[in-house]
Image 1 (tube, rainbow, N blue to C red):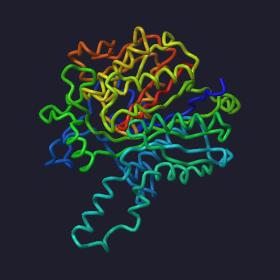
Image 2: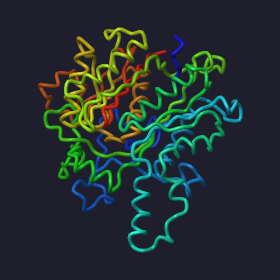
Image 3: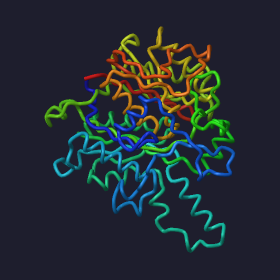
Image 4: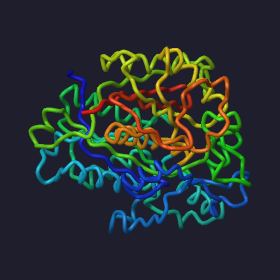
Amino acid sequence: MSGVAAVTGMGVISPAGIGLEPTWRGLLAGTPTAARDPQLAGLPVDISCRVPDFDARQLVGGAAWRLDRFTVMAVAAARQALADAHLEPAEWEPSRVGVVMGTGTAGMDRYMNEFRKIAAGRPQQVSPLAITRSVPNMSAAEISLDTGATGPSFTVATACASGSTAIGVARDLLRAGTCDIVLAGGAESACCHIPAVCFHRMGALAPRGDDPAGACRPFDSGRSGFVLAEGAGVLVLERPGHARARGVRPRALLTGYAAGCDAHHYAAPEPDGRGAAAALGAALADADLDPRDVDHVNAHGTGTRLNDLAEARALRSVFATPPPVTSLKGAIGHAIGAAGAIEAAITVMTLQHQVIPPTVNHEDPDLDIDLDVVAKTARGTRVEAAVSASYGFGGQNAALVLTRC
């Protein structure tokens, strides 16, 4: 049991709402959030899933002026998670508290804005804070600054698996005895020109501009890609004994984690899902669970033709009878480096409430997928153990096993 971590607090900023509870309610309602995005007007794909009512100053106060959008969401989610965990930074030993965050695109929009000034012959107008606002490590660094945590503070980048990987690395810091508490998750603000155009050119984005809300269709026969999203998710992890000593009951336990790489292709998943299956199997072994013990999988489920098929094959190779599967991306899009952290938080909510959110826009099952996809409405069911899986470009895979307290 030395690898077990307690999830004692969670914070989420998502297109379904600011906060864990609004996000949970929106997902249970099966409400899609994709809409036409004025900031992407004129591009080949102009839809996205943005955080509603985003107000940087309201979220983080006076620090907002020097933070990029993805860092604002990271700090806000971390504050929510600390409050949820009943943790006061003034009461902890700061050197024993770590921060691990994941991101994929970081401040890409900032770089683009500053480059426009250079291209227009106005380099003197480039912000001296452009670097410190936009480099990938600033979400973790700013959370450390905001909380006073002086333990390890770093960022992982495994593309769309970044949020899950960060949580797994945080668990390893606890297991190694390096930290007593770790804030871990992911943050992303990818609804901007370069990701929108580049993902479109790769054929990864759903092009259904005539029906934004129905664009992303995970595991559906008519799936055609994902919708770019933004958001952040942060979990507070600590050893169960540490949580008990504080008198805090965990929301769930992180009992297993594993990561691996397809080593197959720079963008496409291994068609038979072998690499993903290896990560899933290793995570279950780490949790000392048999596949038959798993009651639910919160899938990566991007809605791309290749990913969904490869993921289904991976699940069928690990589970003789795959448990009910859901993907959140039909509802809240794909927040790249934040996706895995948000999905881990929702998996914890599923364990607590014994309800699986529906896969929005899953209308016509693909016969080649052959999974029990939870669609149309939320499903109440017994869930004692669940897996949250994420897969990134470059074939990087991560799987978290979470169990009910």
